[in-house]
Length: 366
Image 1 (cartoon, rainbow, N blue to C red):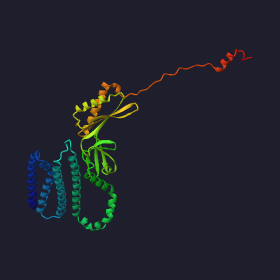
Image 2 (image 1 turned 120 degrees about the horizontal axis):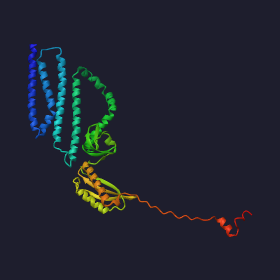
Image 3 (image 1 turned 180 degrees about the vertical axis):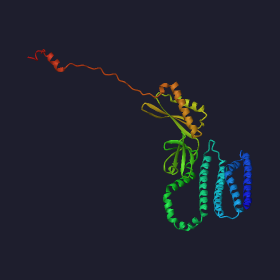
Image 4 (image 1 turned 90 degrees about the vertical axis):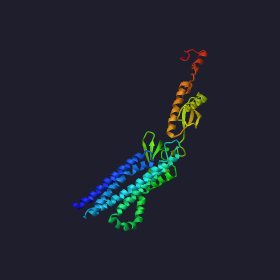
């Protein structure tokens, strides 16, 4: 028992000293993180792997100092597996820190953020791909620590051809989505925060992975679609080239609407609205059939959400102006009711002829 006290004490000492050092480092990083994105990223992603690494170091020191026993081999194997897991976690943390530093140079909260959204999209997919690679390598390294898996390696390699065909057929859908995800990201067909119309729904791209895309609908619903959908199905992307967009407000009005006055009111409405970016403001008559004329007002804004609000503001302003200033221009149906023709009553022709020839009513009975 006395032989075990020293290794246990050494392990506890390493544990306490390591946690104390990490605590001091955390305080320093927390103070620097307000001014340095590097310190913020290290503190956010490296804290937990570092703590687990200190625990494993203390366990190794304790186990190596203990007297030999039958259970040591199993304990060392468990520690080796934990070492592999911590190394993979540390590699993923380093990847996350690097990606966060890269993203810190590209802000998406500015008006013209197309380039930043493209970089965020590509880095997001690369980060997920890197995490998957590190995880697969770690699991493979863990399996190779078991003698049974090492012995079965030769037979697995011998049957790799058949297994590859079977796995390829089984994972055909998954692989197609993964390839589609890479193609979408690096062909710049879709970016994070893009405004799209898919399946008849208007929304923004909230998340892009290797296998699926999440679209946030305007009413906060989420539409989850496989990445292959965006390669095989047409969809609308309003912000692929730039964030600024143009939208239309359409009104069906009576033929008596004063178009020039309505155009002047539109110009006044957008100039007084802070959501208008000053690029486009036009009013056109796009249809004149049936009982109505169709008026289309085109306005522009810096981004799609602002455009939506601007269109609503313009529609409300024009409707209110027409209702108050020109109520006769509101939509209405016209109908013309013709007066009925007068009825002409004629006597029976045969009876009139007999009376005119001198025959009375009694002549017919004779």
